[in-house]
Image (tube, rainbow, N blue to C red; front, side):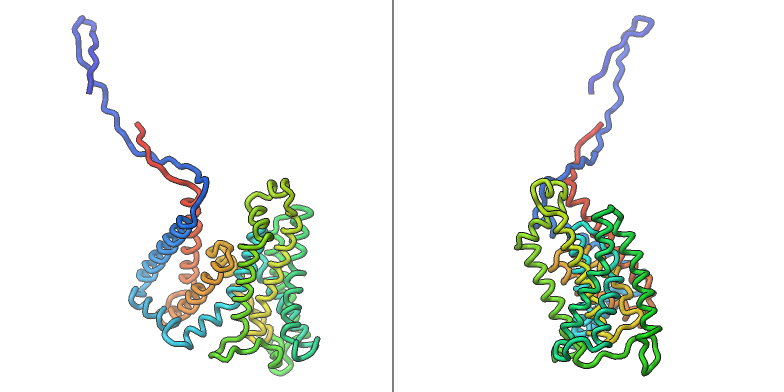
Length: 375
């Protein structure tokens, strides 16, 4: 280190040493121009592993040892064909709910009205069953189509308000959930109350008005319906011209419109498609699980649908995978509540941890971090 010679008032030369310069490492963020599929998958997997580690630590702090947790997961979901069948039964409606949300999200329409669309879908399907609309051998198909129509009608209003007046769809779709719920209560406590038991639900559907069984355990055609719908949407979004234009529109709607993409038409089609699949979710539960319309069949599916679509990156195959693990998580959560006294709020907190970790992973996909020396 060099020193500097100065002359004081007595004309004597004094050597002065400058203070030492401290170097420190400073992060420098750079926006990524492109993201490889390998990096995307790697970051996504790491975020899930971090969320899993935090969840295991949280459960251990609550008194559930990691060994007990692993044993509970294996017993609840994979110990026998019956356990796996229970998981698949829960997976089917979750897949359809996740697809309904993902379709709208791909078009930048934030559909928070899934529960309302499920309710209208179940009401329309139940009306077909109660009033014996259509032939018996095609009654289930008629109920499914009616459910799709009900979901489309319920989402058409918020879609129109967003397209014409620019009203935020989060508010309109969310508020319509309450309207649909009160309509449901009116029907099950009023004209559609079960005449046999007088409980607030509709009378049981006839055998030909239920989704047929597959012949293996308690699985019915809701599972093939969910998987088939996911495959169709995967082909549309990944290989068709519509999917390409939808991706272009979701990235930059203004630029897409400038180059001739029919933005309004694609948006309307995605909104109505989301509502139709949402109505189909209500049909899958009422005709495949409950065999009637109850007053709370839709409970929890709004949060689950948004979570599945978000974690699955709005990709149909990702939705299927996440829905399966969500079904495992729900069943394990119920088991932990019964045998370990874990509160339901803790299960919801674990879901929130997964959402937060996956959301935080977007930072590493958007930015590249460098370290540089600074004084």
